Length: 147
Image (cartoon, rainbow, N blue to C red; front, side, top):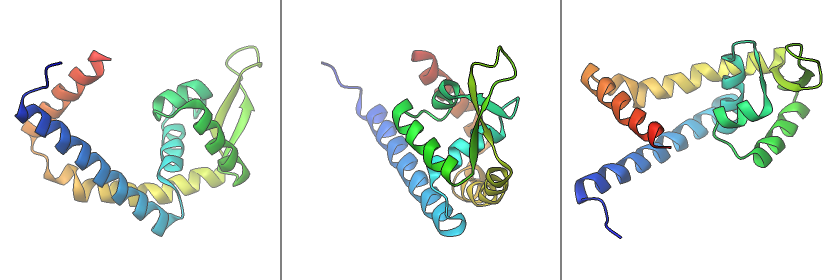
């Protein structure tokens, strides 16, 4: 087995460290300011930005990069808190179930978005030059295309 060269491995490790640090900052801020877990925010954010305002479960799992069984447990708890609801799909014959934001979930998402995007701007996007943005798009596209 051949390891990548040192510089590339160092970039990989820096990426992992930066991602972990961002996740930690976002988790802490969302829990302290909005009493919301980061994975729950990601679900609310995905549903809020969905074209029809709803998503099928498997599409949501793919969007938030979650394992279906752990996402199912999260959705159960979020449904108990009245943040999301399962509804029959009107786009097909009515047999499929979709997940939708409830009014309470939409309000929680709006409030938590302020916290989330404040951290993202302060720690990440404010530091990127146009050259950085182009380069990062190029790099992340290569990673996603390799999948």
